Length: 110
Length: 117
Image (cartoon, rainbow over all chains, first blue to last red; front, top):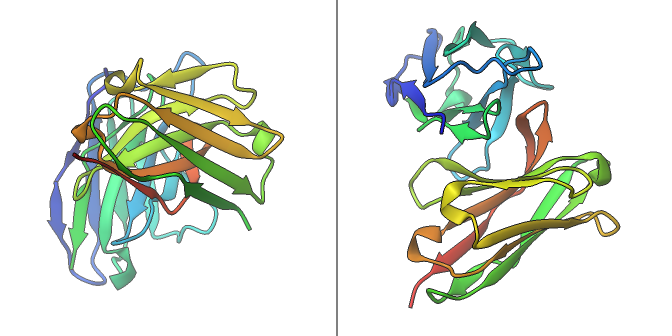
């Protein structure tokens, strides 16, 4: 089973400042079809999760461009260029290359 | 507007059964792979199961194999999760979600399942 490890687990941030979350997988997420199925989701308090990024760096429809994803193989990063108050919540990475696995979640708090 | 509406949750005794439903509208359900994801109170997301668009292929996380069965009725735009031999550790909010290039793009509001005597 693939293990997804996120760091940090909690991140105090300052409004207007950047934030970054790391996600590391226990093995390469490059699929035999050449794609890397790593996505990022945001879960605001009391809400279902919301897709932000898919296949490492593709921003989903309606997601602000302050969110960006990068990485390759086993190491991936979600960056928020300037944190806004509405960004508070828990962020999860998820892999879909070898079955499906979520990271533990990173709590972003102001 | 895409909508996923779950139902069927509630209280079940250990060893009991429940069937969750997820009615999907606003997209081509018959073309969509579907997932079930759960979240225990105060905990993180855990992927449970995935079913392909025609129901031909289903996979499960190890902890529910042999106990849970995912199915779908494309004529009714409905996804199901039959949960048998329920355990206390199955207590969670259960979400259905659509698949988008291996990610999960549309989510229901969630349905609480509580397993307790």
